[in-house]
Length: 285
Image (cartoon, rainbow, N blue to C red; front, side):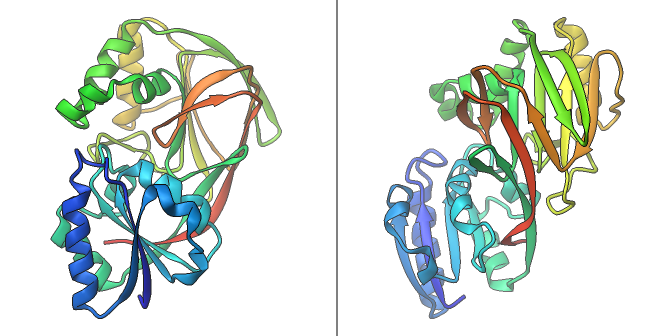
C-alpha cells in the first residue's frame, strides 16, 4: 500500500467507526503510508484512480457502496468491520477486533473474489426476495441498535408467522421454471448470522457460480424445517424447496420488493443476475 483511501461510515456499529478511524489513521501514520480519509457520503467526489488501496470502515452496506468503484480495477479492498452483520469480513476471516483486522492488512495476504451484477446494480453477498427480504429490510433500526445482529433473528421468527407466497418465473442455463415461493435467496457468499451458518458449504466467493435457494412452503413449521435443512447443509430439491448453482439467472418480475446485500431494493423490471468472476481484489486472513 502506497496511497490509501480510508472510507468510513459514521453510523456503522452504533457509531463505533469514529474510534476505529483513529486506530486506522494511527496505523497508516506508523507505517508511513500516504492516505486520505473521507466519509462514505463523499465517495462520489473522489477520483478512485488516485489510490491503490481502499480501507472501508463499516459494515456490509459500506462495502456495497464501494463495490462499483472497485470491479475489474487494480485496487485492493481492506475491511475494518464494525457494522451490524459484517458478513463479507467474516467470510474473509477478518475479525471485528480492530488490532487483528489491521494485522491482516499489514500481512498483505490478498485474493480475488466474484461479484454479482443484478440488473444495473452490483452485489458482493446476496439478493433476497420474500421472507429473506422482509427480515433484512423491515427489521426496525431501533431493534438493531438495541440487539445488534440478534435483531435479525428476532425479526425472522416474527416474519415466519406471516409468510406470503408469490409466483416467480425463473430461467437459467436454458431452463425455465415457474414456482410459487415464500423466499428466494441468490448468494455469492452464503454465510449467515456472522459465520455461524451457511446456506451452502459449496458457496464460495471465487467459484464463478451463485447458489440459488427457493423455499415454497407457507406453513411456518414446515418452512423452518426446510430452512434448517438449508443452513445445516442437508438441502435437497423436493416439493418444498429447490437448490441449484448457476452463473446466470433471470427472474420475471412485476414490482417486487427485495434486498441487495442488506439494502432494501424495489425491482421494477425483470431481475437479471450474472456472476462477474474474480472481479475484486481483497485483503484476507
